[in-house]
Image 1 (spheres, rainbow, N blue to C red):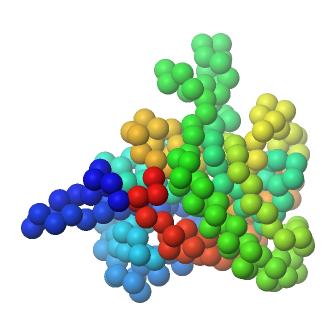
Image 2: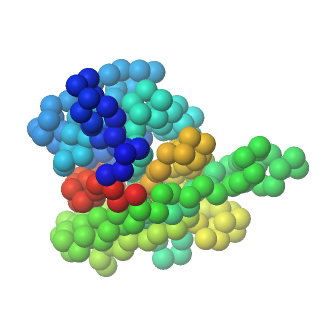
Length: 276
Ligand code: ADE
């Protein structure tokens, strides 16, 4: 652990700064708050109509919360995590639509880079560029993303076959092959993408995009502005086409929690601040 990750306590002792863990919707957090309750108990602080749950889970001091949906909600929530709760780093977990040609329902995508696909201030600035920041792409923290990807690989290795068997019956669009872990570009916008035409437009504009969701790039922008490391992990609930809303709904209620629980447990159990 490095000295910047430590805070002085009342008696001069030091305590690790917490990790911020958030999702948009409760199903996307899996059992995290229940696991925190069992491990350390939970202190809850309500701010801006959100509950921030403070405690230790799988050995890591965390502040866990729900952002709700969309970029504004995500930016407001991560700002509070940074300014009120002084988090050392931020991890966002949830589901996404698959965009990359080899990205299937049941796969996992770890964002290495994030971009807001609906940002367009042309002709004042190039398409996708965030005005006055001179960039369109925001990098996830490499060590955090690597640790998340390793946790995803272990999760799939240990539970992937059972997951595919269990869920392919419930969800016809769940690939019967073993789920895969992808790393690369995740794109975010304030739209639920649900047509072949719309996802085709995204592929044409951003050929390296792997997954589309509604929060990650906003989190990455705010974390960039405040020099806070962040990472995003997304399970693919749909392929952003005409089947997206039914596939998303079934995945969210039946499967998303199992993924988040399995991935976050392995990630947190392996994570120490010194890994940065
Ligand atoms: N999250 C999950 N699926 C999505 C989609 N198709 N579009 C945007 N966000 C999503």
